[in-house]
Amino acid sequence: MSCPFNEEQLTQLKAFVEFCKGEPQIIHHPKLAFFKEYLASLGVTIPGPTPSAKNFTPSGDTYSNATNNNAEAAAASSGEESSAESDVELDMEGVIDADTVDSSQVMGDETKEVTDEDRDQSDEKRSQAMRAFSEQQYSEAIKLYNEAIELNPQSALLFAKRGQIYLKMNKPNACIKDCTRALELNCDSAAAYKFRGPAASSGEESSAESDVELDMEGVIDADTVDSSQVMGDETKEVTDEDRDQSDEKRSQAMRAFSEQQYSEAIKLYNEAIELNPQSALLFAKRGQIYLKMNKPNACIKDCTRALELNCDSAAAYKFRGRAYRLLGKFEEASHDLCESLKIDYDDQTNEWLSEVKPNAEKLRQHKLSVQRKKEEREHRDKLRRARKAQEARARAARAQAEANARAPPTGAGGFPGAGGFPGAGGFPGAGGFPGAGGGGFPAGLNPQDFSNLLFDQEIMSAFQDPEVAAAFQDVSSNPANFVKYQNNPKIAAVIEKLQAKLGKGGSGGFPGFGGGAPGAGGPKAPTDDDVGLD
Image 1 (tube, rainbow, N blue to C red):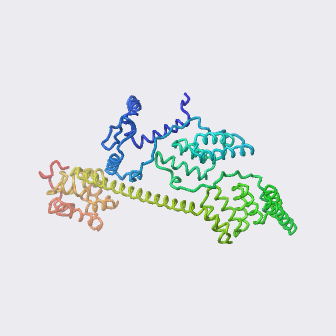
Image 2 (image 1 turned 30 degrees about the horizontal axis):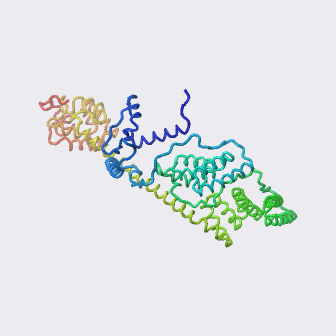
Image 3 (image 1 turned 30 degrees about the vertical axis):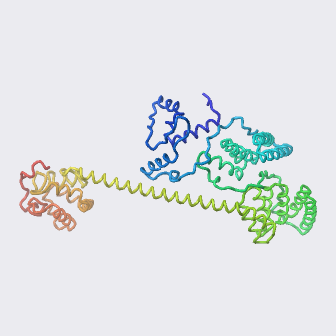
């Protein structure tokens, strides 16, 4: 089955779904009752309206902003830290209903081969459209821009300018569509960012670029750099004769330029560069002509080559800076023009710099603000992660403490052997301690003391020693074997620890301590206290 929706409708549907994820209470809006019923028919569990939800009125989209915003903020703060957006009190004045993008919005034929005649006619239509726009004849201006786009669908500026008119007509989605197309054609179109920003802010938070209001007067469409642009042979060995002939061509090109014969001047500079491709001045001067011909990208290519040959070429910095300005790249323009002035002060360069400085400073401050917000957001995330990790550790500690409290007072708990200490019954000996008989505990031993012993870290650590574990395993199988370990200080130290923990006056004790050792009274018969403790 093919999808019955076009791309535009799918985009709107995706936007609606994303909005529902962020604002699930919108499902309870009276106008979306049909959608709510559909979800219910699929068995979807729909969350009920909460006290903090917006109170939608049956008549439309009006609701009490101040009260609901405060309630939402309180609800968000009652959980974990609210999202970055929820911390912001927004001035919603001027926000309008979204327009429906008309599928008939003229976007032109992307595959069209645009001729010079098409461009000339398109420029004429654009001029007429700009006059209509200045006279606030927006519908007429849209019509003229449509005709211009049909002639030249590769012009980013046409789409951006038509987007400006849609913005004036309170059609933000149509504006966004045009400006997005402009950015696809020219990702550095400042005009497209400028107009798309306010259009986006009419619905949700604007993009980063939209926060900057720039003066775009004088910005032109980017030219396509011709791959046949003569750059010469970098490896050529230039002779004196080549230099002389190149200088002669340059003189002729300068005369043609002064007579505004730009095409002839370009041709002569091409010949001069072929003769002497090591001359930075030739590239800078040809870049100046491309600038006059409104071909900023070609100018930038020439001036960049000139700076590769001579990094102190004031002319190259000057003309490249101006070319960047025509493309709306104000920060790059400011940099190059400043560099040119450092090398060789020029009144025209200083004037050009004055034009771009305000926009360049706005962009610089904007980037600093974005970077600061990014760092603050990362810091908040870091604190949030640390707090969650701390809470997780606290929960784990509480769970462990509760588990320890619920543990049985007797039983096997982590010592070597089958259920605790070496031996089958817990401590050495199948039925308890050596010398304690078959009842399990030495006489007079409190079972709670034995339980505490199972969780004693000092004793646990001692029994991690293989030698200690093996000794107690040996004694557990035959208490008489204790005599082999009487002179072993490591084993004696462990037994002393056990005696200190458990042998509090009991007569059963450990082997050799208080009547429990072989030869010191032998195993005792089980007492009443021992019954049932094994």
